[in-house]
Image 1 (cartoon, rainbow over the protein chains, first blue to last red):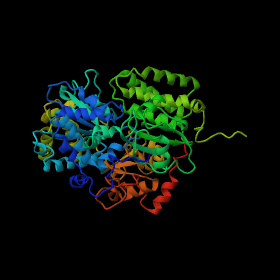
Image 2 (image 1 turned 90 degrees about the horizontal axis):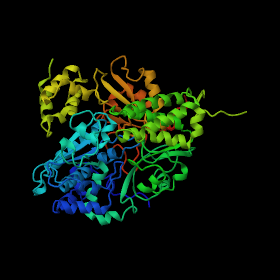
Image 3 (image 1 turned 90 degrees about the vertical axis):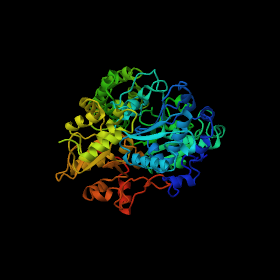
Image 4 (image 1 turned 120 degrees about the vertical axis):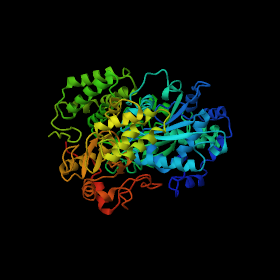
Length: 426
Length: 200
């Protein structure tokens, strides 16, 4: 098994980012087919596909949809394009390369959920990608695929592309909804879940870019067909964002169940010359570190979870022997400190102290006792914060401390980073 | 001085897209920043009036999101990623070069042409790092020398200027997925800087 191209099958073909180019690849045929089905039948098809959300939580998409209460309208649909997970750039790739695929998927979901207002919440940094989507929505409107009486059927749907303005927390679905309503992007208490009370207090579904971009393929060829790709607990393909000390960084679409080793050695063409793999993150900045011994794990949500980490948002960051785990931890802790929304105390204060301590450690100023303080801070955050941001601010650093304890200890009182400047004993 | 008529009509149109007017706060702030370069306190009140909320509610949003400029910047704005993936490919060297040329993060060049900032927020260019955004457009596979060239010939790195340097949509080759250095000069330069700085 090498790359398995479904969402990226036509990438590279002339004009794929225009409606004409997309239709040349069979685009919008799945929407046409879907509009002839009942919403219930579509939801069943998506359930049968085994599709799990591609944003990071891996929740079954069809099941999420079926939580919407019957007969409560209006309902809303939001595409989460607030991709900000460190290491992750697949949503940007899908929007750059095949934007109409996302819009078709969004319309399929909107029809299945009987939604007349669909939103695409895209992070502020993706300015050019927002303009691309706005252009594509207008192209689709001109063809009668967006707006009133879509494809001549009794279905109306507006798509609004809404740009954020720099806040990682808005990738959390309730914070996204707060932001979309015009408030600070702070998460809300769940329950009630967005399916019951979401945007403007109405039933709402939030789905990731890649999840929605998969829908045209499922509707075109059927849920049962989709389920045959991948492995038992993780159906289909997934886009993996590969970066770090590798020869060919980039986005690769793989059948789930392929091993991480194959992704690294075949698609990424291995580590850079002179580089040996020291550690990697399998799911972006939030996820626990894994080691070379984990390379034979399959790209399967459950198998990676069993190994103590997660495939998260699909970002693979490979690090070689020259990488200092204290430095990487410090950067990630800084990131969470910067992005903490300030709503709850454990996260707001915890990331502050965590960051202070990591800077002292990196500078060689921390004592061995302070490493226990670091553990204590993380213990007081993990599972005790209002939303997952605070929890995940502890996961990488704690897993790195466990796997590379000596490296952390050797920083205490060191004049220079012991990884980058190893002391040679004479 | 209050809104220009064009800004007023832009924000009114944005407001009317949404089921509830308040949703247009972020788009309205963007419209002001694009037109005027930054968002002054006076505009909080102007936006608030159009969206039927209070100026302090607009301000609470403007100060929450990191991309809004509440004071004037140089003609161009550089945002340099220093998160893990870019750091593994040498973003510290990029930061150092900008510090030498312009001053610490947040500084504006003496001629007012560029303001630069380092950010720990991942920009989403991890496979093409080190990366930055120049006025919201990606510039990728940076080297210290490329940064100097960018400071000297900024216009060449903006979309539509016929340069292959910027990360416009489609800049990454279809099958290869990753972007290639654009010249032999950069090829050797980028190989040199593949390692992160060994300085501490």
